[in-house]
Length: 315
Length: 309
Image (cartoon, rainbow over all chains, first blue to last red; front, side, top):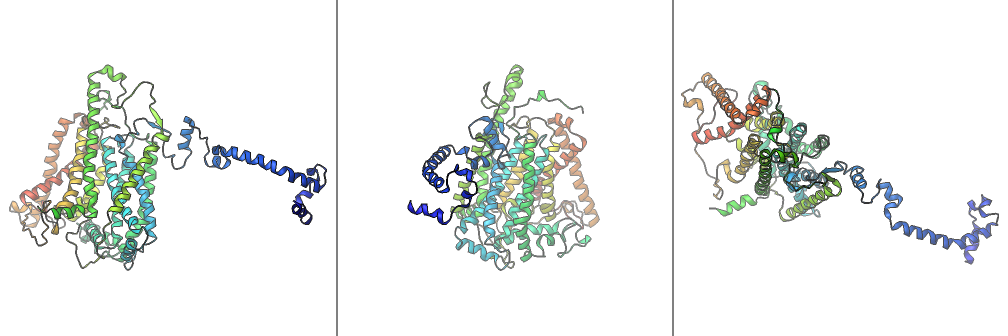
């Protein structure tokens, strides 16, 4: 205590000097002593309040600044929990009570989207270790497999998630067809879905070449050899040679950046795989999800309609 | 029976998805069929009893008056989605730990793989290369598949069966899609994976791959069978043959369609009807071409200096 009383004499706090009224007319030293005396009690009160507030974290300023609504289990808050969240507001607040049954949707659309996220995540990690050049590509994959911590599981997961995504996309399309969900008013969204299906296949196909091994090389060679038979745009296709197509200016040359699958093809496949198609697919996905909502949400399970209830058109 | 050969094919890492696809497709066909049958039974019941049709909630799921028709997404949908994400993650983890992604020797343009197979999801198109020239199998066919898929909502005028599984209300569209997806697409992939061996030759499952096998097939063009060997005649004959297929096939299909789908026929506009007919005829031409190739060893139907069909 003795030491503490000496401190203000050496360095008096300037704010204490400025408003004399704050000390109720008492001298600085007396006021200071009073403050020190009352400090433990005041702080005790504050600690008590703090502990009291901590019992209900949902009322703290940090919490309310993040979650803009209350957290009690009321219908309003359940709705706001979805609507005021940027990631969840893809959903409506309420849905058809039977739509949560697995039987109807098979969950394939959602699984496809989840796999796209998994693929983006693992893909970005793989990009840290991969150079799209003829010299390094194959060695980078070997390095990933044998030296990078968890590199093998990373690559495996990327590969299998890609295959699984194709299966999920097909089953999603199959389900949408079988439930007639492409019918009015969802015709346009079916078309967006068809484009997404093609983009998914192209994403997988461009990734096939990247390890630069025999499997990828020959798969892509077989695949792109078809491009030289494109009617009018390929040098071996119908009317191609008549229109001046050669191996050095046709559509296959444009795809591969050369007349054979080589360094340029590797770079092009890499850029399409990692940048081009993901961006295009993301844009179509945004439209796809948006239209699901705008077209009236998920299509069913809807009440069955009888043939006798359909009003026939004039024709 | 070469079990080892069969095991080698089905355990090749990249073929595992196809091995998985088979039971998955069968399972989901069954799941859809089960629900379609239940709905069809309900529809039949409601059609027989108009009084019930007015009061029934029209679903096969349980329902009681007073129940809410809509439920909160939080938590009822989100918990399902969360669970699905966890299950998929676990499947992926286990799959990635137990099975390694394929990695072959470095790419070598001088060493051709035999068989050189496309990724499994394109094997249907590669299988088509046996029966069609690359410009059809590799370019025209995929384009038409995409266009055909995109046209579906605009040519299917049947207002029934939107938002529920049914078979009886949509027999035509469902059997068409089933034919295209299961018979043409999935089964071609299975043939391409499990049956095609070196030289893209046909090896039954369990038959040992013989890398020296050569099959002498004498394939003829259809005009040759009619003694037409010089060019303008061959081209004209082919044009007539393909034209005849579209005319006769179209008329036959027309009669069948009108007989079994009179309502759809009445509803469809000129453009809708002809687009559907055209796409149907193209789809049917696929197994037809395969059949005349396998049965009569016919390579081309239409031979011209510029392209062959």
